Image 1 (tube, one colour):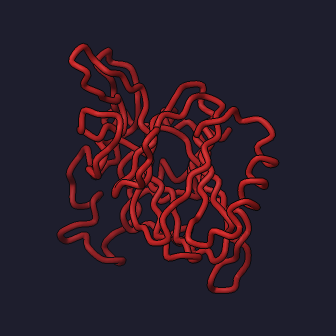
Image 2 (cartoon, rainbow, N blue to C red; image 1 turned 90 degrees about the vertical axis):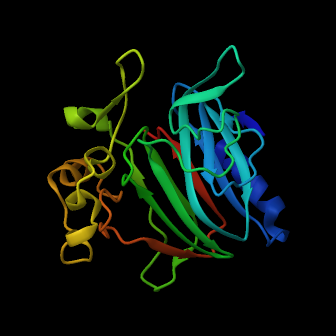
Length: 246
């Protein structure tokens, strides 16, 4: 159910009140502030039968009690004359509008969650590149270590401004659509933290991850990145997920 993004706080508050007795579900509020539509996808599937989110819309979605996986937004999606559905970024390769559990085609900005009823771990990851700005904002809740409220994590800046030429992803017309991660594009163990670069001592920031980190300090930019940590939030009433938040 997509609705215009008007009176969002009132709408969210009413829906959270209605859902208050349904303890089996966690609410994710998807808001698309991009000037273009996006198509949500998840691996494993979250059962979203209508993944298209038009510009300026808010989607209220009930997540499972137990779920671990990645959510992302696909962009510039079309259906060809043979009814094959595909997207310029984040494509699932299924040929239909609903993803059937495959991982996305990179580059893509990933929102990773580990949901165990009222305890949710969350992060924004650029480990497989970047295709659009995103933000995760818990609604209430507190960190399980008792250090305070559950923080926002995001990557809201225009990564195209700092994407090195050898990591630029383009469409069939040669136009910029995203930025690959160094690991995915260059296949070097140094950037992937594999082989001799496995483990916290050997897996270190690199020249590419540091460039991205300057713009997106609250996102993880290489496999060993733990600043900020992956937060564990308890008893949040929901999570606001915003595409193109600024």
